[in-house]
Image (cartoon, rainbow, N blue to C red; front, side, top):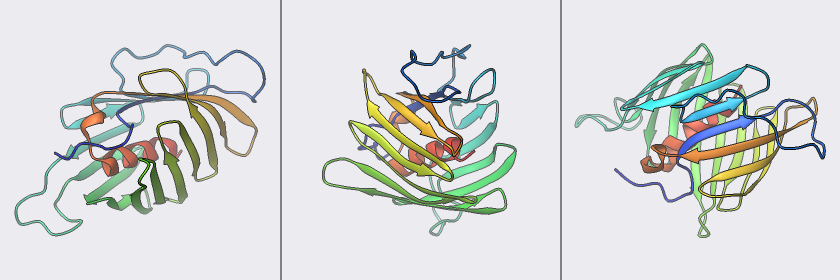
Length: 200
């Protein structure tokens, strides 16, 4: 399998509630031990996902990851992709090269990953009704997914980004931590999973 060229691996994303200030960094809350992806929106409300073989299972997500195309498949059909649900709506998306095409709820899921010579990955497209344009580099994660914008900087190792998330009602301190096993996935697979997590 093609190895990701960018600094995105297994995902753990935590966002604290409240407006930005000079207050201390947000509390993680009761972090699930086995979660590979956590989106914290404050209190006990969380989006969690654990990657187990070819399944992505969590509190608001249940996806099967088809990692290889069948020999007789055509582009964007019967090939590698995600099938299942996220945020209680259906997901059915296929991958071809650096693109993802399919559905999220009643809308399209169309994403493209563009890599520049400096290793920065830009993710552009739409996830359901959420227009999406953000980029991830060695030192930053910034852009928007729907009404939420992100302005984050790389901090401590191994892969951690910290900064602000704003969804139209003030800004919240946000932290993204990236761990295995998604480090071995292709950029479009990782970008799609991250976009799904951020699209609510």
